[in-house]
Image: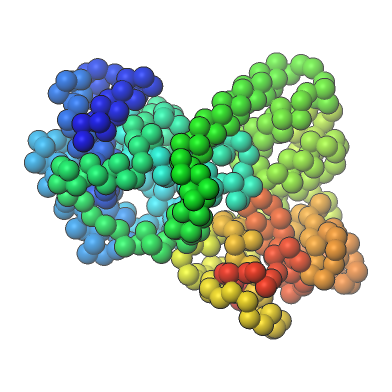
Length: 454
């Protein structure tokens, strides 16, 4: 299996991932991918004079299994005569504190831990074990959630850490398949741990891995190569558009309406991100095509676009959401969960059943097509410009008009909760009708059962 070692060596050199003689922090979970990465870098370290340090974060999510992962990583590092740094964190508490999903919390604390561990040791590079199959799965996850070309461009060989711009993340295995890593591990008898939660934590990713990809590979056996090539094209195109947008924003020159639509979108996206606002497509399109129209992006923040393309803050409309109200991003992973938002307790679970009788409507309960809704979702209060296609109707209407038709008092509107997809589509309004687009259909495979009470 020297082919894999030679390929990783070539990739590191051609992409300039690591310099001769530099220090590298290797992120190791104890699973197959990261243990193979550690072995490969260990084999190449002497020739390149790299100084490797092993880093492992115990999330504490799997009890004794998590502790066994940690012991394996420590033992392996010592056998390789490498320094090792470990940490422990209560991810569930972090998720509660941040009002985010466990999966999102785990990702954030990992990045913070690796960045801090690196900087404390004056290391500026962290090596991660993401591989080609991860990249392809990420492509379809983002594609099905309505991502842009920037999103489907996927992970880069090198990128700054989201926890610190002073730390670079490198991914030497992005061109390697999971089967390559498995073969290498068998050939070199590399010990690794299996994470049983992988089969349950991210239901959507596992359906893509075990159902969608095998089906597509029947039509295109070289699917991974084709998709990763397409991702590289998307990433290049997105980089060009992003550069043009940044240049235009920095110059503050020229008429916004004369820019290409792709550059217009990216200009607005960049401004929303800097304001800490989710750049949902519908939100971007409203700001792009309707200069001067107020768009509430958060309960306490309403924006409009000037003719020069700049986003301006405006006062919230009277009768809008209550000032200081919040929004909560919820990842619908696993089989069930619960959260609290704006005084309401919301519980959800996902069941698998094709066909059957349509669900009956009951007070405090709704059922949706889970795959149509996707994950994550956002709970918030209504915003001017929000639209929904009520069940049974063939067109979308403004929520404000729906409130008026249903004779919902203006003061009551301020407290109603809505749920929106990651693309910004409203699929549920508290105590009102659900969206036609997200209802259970005869072809529905997974049902999202939604319960709420105050």
